[in-house]
Image (cartoon, rainbow over all chains, first blue to last red; front, side, top):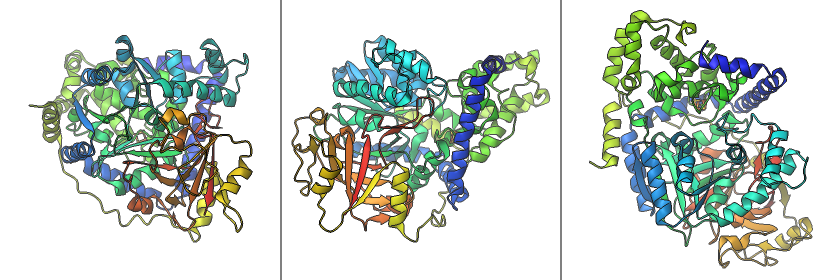
Length: 423
Length: 193
Ligand code: SF4
């Protein structure tokens, strides 16, 4: 059994919960369908979204330069981080130079990827997540089980008991979601007002204008940047898109595909720092991306806009939950990203796919997620000793296009889909 | 070599085929026979109340009627004479905490999703989020069909910040139960003027 199938088996032991999980995500998938069917142009939008991303990623050098130049013209300080360590160190430097002891932040898969929170906390900086779901799992000491609904694995009772332990709610035994949300609001309000800096991720960076665009339903990215005097925005290199015309395409799709809403409540465009605030800091993070661009079979995974719909629709994700995957991002997207990140560490996720291809038929930017998983399987398979040795250097191989091409040729004879013997 | 040059160098070395930018002129996005009616319907779906300014109403009277017990009303708009806190002159954003009603101006409404474009037009934009209840004044003729049309028209303006707001702050993070009023405004009232 693979690492994923063992964990999935454990997940399925709680039949009632696993059925709830399955039904919940199927409902989100159905809401997405209603949204898609409500727009006659939906499939054209997917075509355009995919083509814009292909264009942008294959001109990413130019768009990144344009984005950075525009942002600097707007008064922002632009940093370039080669990897997670560099990113974390840059954030720490900025905070220490400004004498900041506490930051509030909105949801960012990038800071999760870089392990920023534990790093800053070890250096004595308090980090407060302000997306409700993120705040809950932060207090629980967990990682997200879904990229858009990070605390979906917890019941109202679990959240209620957590809030009682943390002194956030004062009516013991009241686990009503409306009450709990209100108590979290009061507690977070205090954090917004006392933090020294606000940090956001970015859904998009706009090359033509230097804007950072952040989409939230809670308004927490706006609260995080409206009160503290310092705004730090972190974005992966692939988040940059050409201009507002392109943004319109993605803004229309992100939420419809992800949660089945016509839009998020807030779509915010940060071009300049607030009056009286310090300069905005923008950190562009590579951490593998510049190498993945050169991977002929897998570069298109960088088109992803992190909507979450590939996991919502995935029959395996729905029936195994986010924690069954070894990578911090689950579902078809996470399987693929995990393989790019570290082949050996995450190949146990490759079994988490029935090749039903549902993911790629809903993906708003038309990433060939299922086909990519199939290709990874071909590189993995039942591993004869000769190939095993090769696999050791696999992560390195995938990161070097030329080596990769050679490796695929060498490994061809060993292809197999039999993952059972793999673990 | 700087980090930037290293990263850009790796990208250049990795890029294979360079793909052209597609034309976006043939999307044929959705339009509505009555964009205002569609905007009102979308706003309601997003959780907003929509009020039309009728003869004899003033912005003040509508706010008073809707929020009879409001203590702190924050606005820098000339038509809101009942405002008792001004986001242009407060010492800091924190001074706006405790605002019962914040009143701001929207520039553009989008029929397909109820989004309203709010370019920052006050010193402390916190008023748009920190207020318990948000009131947005929107000219009824400023409605476009869809986001493509909207993004052709908007600009973050002199303060360099702008946001599309559609409905109150919301979350479904606890067991997928939808709750209005997460971290920002708990209600949104759109007054069509
Ligand atoms: S891979 Fe596609 S469907 Fe999955 S999160 Fe990314 S954009 Fe959404």
